[in-house]
Length: 207
Ligand SMILES: C[S@@+](CC[C@H](N)C(=O)[O-])C[C@H]1O[C@@H](n2cnc3c(N)ncnc32)[C@H](O)[C@@H]1O
Image 1: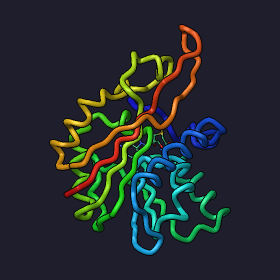
Image 2 (image 1 turned 90 degrees about the vertical axis):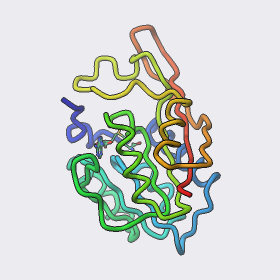
Image 3 (image 1 turned 135 degrees about the horizontal axis):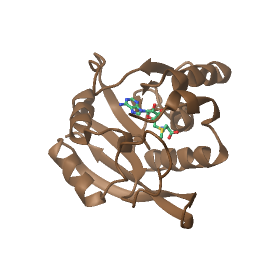
Image 4 (image 1 turned 180 degrees about the horizontal axis):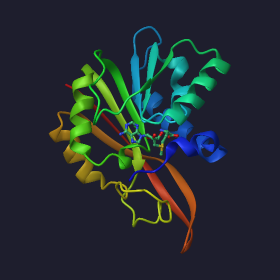
């Protein structure tokens, strides 16, 4: 069983998630030379596109992929309202579907990797989808006790990631120049009171 993102889509956007997305996007903008004329991006597990709406003015075109119809419906409405002509939503689950027949200069994924069971497999697929010299940016939770998703029915993913272990997986999947930084802190009420959950950004390159 997995979490029902279709049901959560309508209420997904809120000030905390918007701040988080801005922090994630700012690190991508700081670390990577993006070009409005050239760079073709893929956001995987885009939800309602919060990260991509910050990056949209910096990229030539963005494919926004998610496997939740509900999230994609919200996203389509937002793209229409914004009049953004370079954003293209796509229903896609790279674990089960064939990958799109195109390549990308940048792939980014925010708070979605912990929902994907087979992390080595998805990282290798990302590597295949990138152009030589292309970048992968992964933002997600640092390893945590399980408190982050406690009480969320259907969660069967990872309790964050150990940076050294993820770095080794990225390297085994063909990435180089791997660097991590903390990009955001999520404050959340848990059964032990208010707790902070750090969010890392890992940027790395396909040779
Ligand atoms: C925690 S949300 C993050 C959404 C967005 N990136 C954000 O930061 O607001 C995780 C998203 O990943 C999507 N997702 C989960 N598993 C997926 C998969 N295997 N393929 C594509 N999308 C997936 C969910 O539908 C959901 O929209």
